[in-house]
Image 1: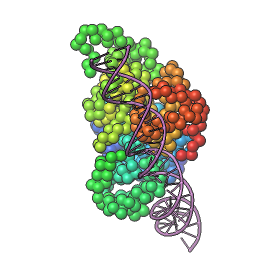
Image 2 (image 1 turned 180 degrees about the horizontal axis):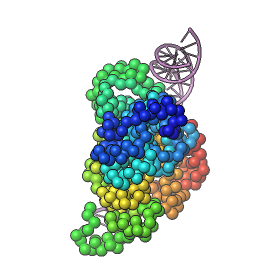
Image 3 (image 1 turned 60 degrees about the vertical axis):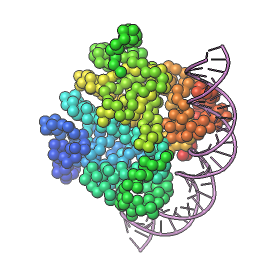
Image 4 (image 1 turned 30 degrees about the horizontal axis):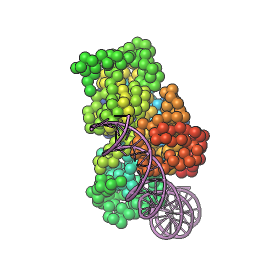
Length: 249
Length: 249
DNA sequence: CGCAGACTTGAGCTAATTCAAGTATCGTGG
DNA sequence: CCACGATACTTGAATTAGCTCAAGTCTGCG
């Protein structure tokens, strides 16, 4: 949890990892968008960079007090809420450059679990400090509102998916969304590795894992994709897109 | 749209309706939470109050440029997104004291339609001005973040509902949620009037209108509620709550 | 190498949808 | 104020998408 580790060796490793927002390659994806050099420097003094989160570990859990937002610097996370009777709903998958924890601002407690799906690394953004800085840096203030707003828009998209779409459409939307996000990050948009289980995909899409598996197989049979365990290759993107738009729900 | 109406009579009517945030009865529900008298006065200079929206009218529509957030002063709205192929997903129902339009901050265009389900009245909050004021009024800045965060949390709840729950649970959750929100506003929590059609409820809950109708009838047969058109009476709240927690999904 | 977790596939079941027909309600204009 | 048309709602019957249960395979990790 704490950034100042008691173990010197780790401390060194932190220093090694420490980079400024100013020269971070994620600058254009992450929080600092639109800030000038001086503003970036101020941001740097606040943000603790390079905290590792091992695969399977929680970055935070529902119920924990809220102190910071986190930016994914490297890796892959799932966020999920657990209902009173123990049902899990994955609310999102988060990759490089995306911000986690915004749900916690409302109550000062986290309302989701955020679990690393592969060995990952985050930057910690102490929210109180960010807020204070945002008063002097309008671009930062505005950007934060924007990022939260984007999250709301994304959630509305998921509602549309969950409320209106059939299994095939959901999966197609999911794969195309992942593809597009990988593309933005400079990875292949046509071939990628799923970091999550079929069950987690199912939870996110409101389907059972068997249905996810079956539908992926179906897509493969139809020549839309190739599946090999968690490796996905999009063979016929147009057909997937057509699936999304044409089905009359 | 514009607040300074060219018609004197209307202008008078606006003045009649015009009240300050300072003495607004919704103070505790709405934006000004936690502001002191001076800060409230500053807010008052920005906010245009008492804009009427007739039943069936759009407060805004997806695609329109974003200028303002809106606070519901009176009445009832639905917000919905339309997919490319024309399917509607109601993303929320909004009542007195709630803020509309936060999704638009991310792109500077509205991404939902907001439609009045009864004759309503809103306060217009020009976002640029709000943002500027927020720099000088940390409590306002923080409260805005909070309100947006709350929306994200709410959306996660809807995802849980859409992804995991059966029709009966969804309806029970819906009715209990409405009940609780009416209660907060000083209305009866056990007897209320639905402002929306069965179809709109269905859209929100990811069900067809026939399923909504059937499930309401079922609840009535079981003695949980009484239904008379859009008038709902909650007879056995505990059973509804039990429905929510027990079903193993 | 062996085991646990992840995945696939089949068969039968069920919750919710679709289709259909009929009733109630509301707003409008005569 | 009443009649009428449009919209909203209810209910039934048949259909189906996705779920549950079950069995078996694969894979990766210790």
